[in-house]
Image (tube, rainbow, N blue to C red; front, side, top):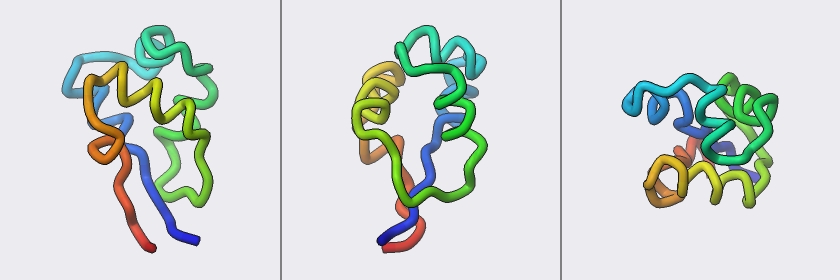
Length: 70
């Protein structure tokens, strides 16, 4: 199983948004956004949340997800 990291913090900073604003704009629960933003690596993520976050940032999923290890 591979490891991934979500670039939520970087994309939020580019937009000038807080993590709370990302949550409000995306409809993803704040605790989930915060958890994803804090983790340096993950093995599982909720695909629906990733889709919502990518749409919110107006990026492709590939731009939101950084593959650390396959």
